[in-house]
Image (cartoon, rainbow, N blue to C red; front, side, top):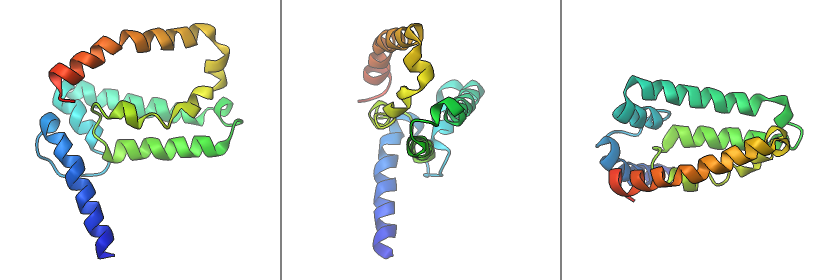
Length: 141
């Protein structure tokens, strides 16, 4: 049991070392990292955005149209999303950490709608310069 506690301490120390450039030295309190980051850069508006993002993700996962493919995918995605919100500060690694969630893109609403697919692709391409500026000039890679 002591080894597990030590491992958790090493994980927390390593994770928190990445946070110092964004939110300073803080303690790891589950379910607060996204709120810390949002409040640091956007104030109360950031808190509202995080709450809206969480509500939107919950709504998306609860839609009946998403459930027929495999309930395991929905359950995995929900638990993985909760993990990301619980212990990961949203920074440059977030894009890499979101890679296990693409099975959700099999949502029939996305698959059937060519305009929605094109909008998602165009938005992703348009946000690349923003990501580069944020990661290389505002934050640190």
